[in-house]
Image (cartoon, rainbow, N blue to C red; front, side, top):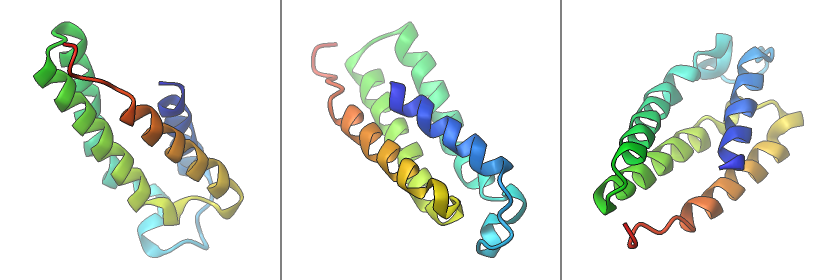
Length: 106
């Protein structure tokens, strides 16, 4: 879960960074709208899974994480070049951690 926290921190940092040289979708932090829905789904799925750790809830949780990671990948163009390497590394780490979540034991 450490990588997920890093990704969230990187997104917050990116939001505060001047994106004047980035494509229009990145100006004024407008990209945050693109990931906020997926972040809310992840949060809701995490809550549901923590309250009732069933296989179905685990699968929903993993799906929500995957949706959020995909949304982050989609807004990668908004990440400042100086932070892109860290962003990509954290995203790869998070995908690896996601693949290690086993829902079959619930």
